[in-house]
Length: 113
Length: 114
Image 1 (cartoon, helix red, strand yellow):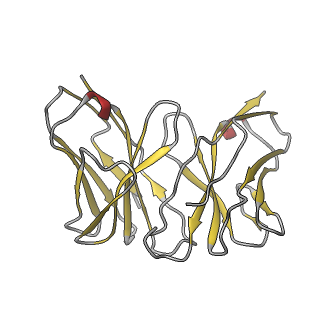
Image 2 (tube, rainbow over the protein chains, first blue to last red):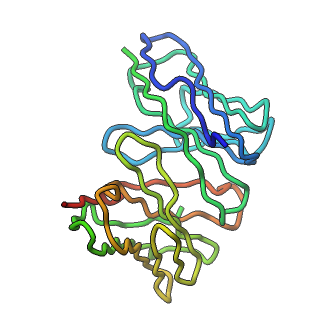
């Protein structure tokens, strides 16, 4: 099993450009999450999904959109990137119940100039 | 969301036990206590979790106070590879609108000396 994979690993954008981050999991997990981590801070939840075709807002959703067309994939989009979105983005997935742990991807380091 | 309080940093020597404390005085009856750690330049990884009873796994032990208002992660013999940020997180087991999300605080930076 590959677990949780993220594409790309690094990206540099100019202000106003758009991009999509891809997260894929091969564990048949129902739940998927997108977090961002700024330097010296813990992770903050951007959006999450509890199943194929469903998405919901987390703590810091502004400036981001998500889609989950297939159970194994969760896409995070930035329509018009801003320097404040410079961060490391982590995707995670888990089974539904709280007794189960979340599995995290390796992260995408995004810089917006 | 119920919050947790952890020391900002702790230090240990290699091959010695480490006790990482966490206070969660507002924990609800359905909250699971989860511990994750984040090695430098990596995503968080699961360490252990529990509800009421103490738990052991190959990585660590989790000691939960009888009133559940605090817990301690125990690394029995620290190695250099255990140097990481350790997060104590409460995960709602009741479902509802929280959908099992993890709320990360600042965590405890563990330094392990050779």
